[in-house]
Amino acid sequence: MSKRFRRHPELKRLEGGWRRPKTRTNKVRRKLKGKKPMPSQGYGTPKSLKHKHPSGLTEVIVSNPKELENIKKDEQCVRISGSVGSKKRMEIIKRASELGIKVLNPNVRVVKNVAPSEKK
Image 1 (cartoon, one colour):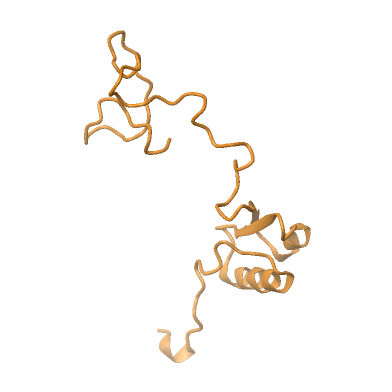
Image 2 (cartoon, rainbow, N blue to C red):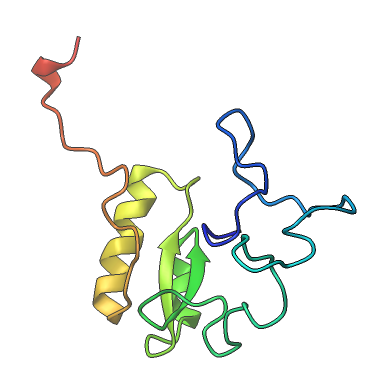
């Protein structure tokens, strides 16, 4: 849930996640004026914006360079999977730049070349 909907007895020791108020006398459940809002229909994201990146493109998770061939660069952008190693990550970034596809996480875990004399 977003920060708009907070748990009713909001104390430091309680988790921040939403819990539906259930008791008979609860003011939030009864939707009294001046109390916190409860999630309900109408607060949702419009269907045209659901599951989209803020840039307006749909995210696609990619784990190898072959998967870039099916990407529509006008409608989709790429996020490289976290299980991909540095070598294959560099290949994916290079191929995506050739095809003109936007990569959302290009700089994650890129390792610099280290000279053999610096290694122990």
